[in-house]
Image 1 (cartoon, rainbow, N blue to C red):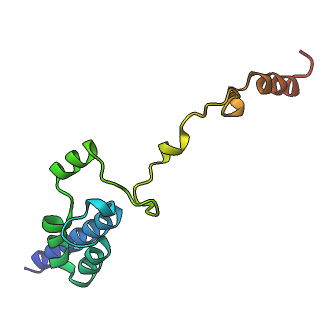
Image 2: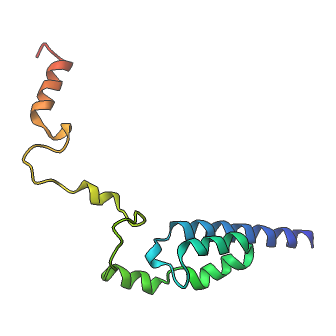
Image 3: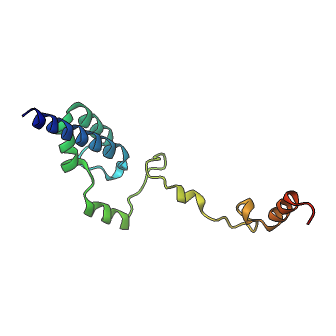
Amino acid sequence: MVWLGGLITLVSIVLWVYAFFDALTTPSHEVRNLPKILWVVVIVLFMPVGSILWLFLGRPSETAAVEGSASAPARDASSTDDLDPSDFAKPSESSHPLGPDDDPEFLRRLDRRIDPDE
């Protein structure tokens, strides 16, 4: 009987950790029913019940996530929750190379520095 209590405790801790990090990493505009910060507070204060409530009432449903990707909602310019690192790696319109490994002149100078006898 002691092992059953330990198993229930372990499951509730795993559920709490999952719900907590899921709530933290979910973008603010996808959270349902309450603001994101309130969901985090509910999960932290009401350990087993808050996690279950998050999974059923706060977490974005799969259909909402698929529909949301087709027509993205207007984003707040001050929000950094939804930044994608690939947005910053867009190629520029300039004619010079983006990095030193793309620059043939830099590679020639590097070859000369490595083996000056050639």
